[in-house]
Length: 109
Image (cartoon, rainbow, N blue to C red; front, side):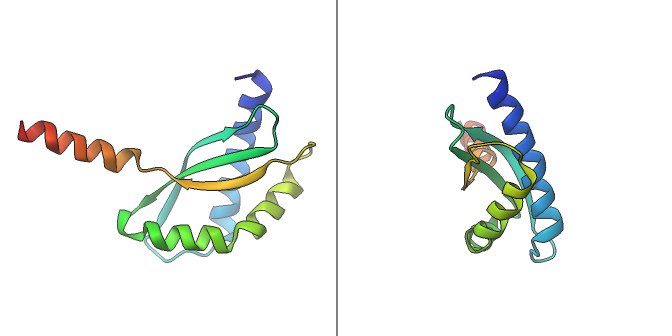
């Protein structure tokens, strides 16, 4: 991964986090955290991995992010001063819940 891609990942993470916090209205008690940002080397696509708490609200958050994708993309495009502007895709990060499952299985052994 190039230094430029790493900087762009950090920039996208900061801006999308601000957009979600300030411009997206989620149910109270639902927290969305950006776990990781992965931009392709050609800078055309960015995958944003989000973790959701509580986990039972994953479907709600996925639907909300899908519904607000164009708004988030537009707000991000205004903040990024670069070409090409990466197209955003949200992916739910289930690493934490999988780690919990593995930990429970290990305890059973």
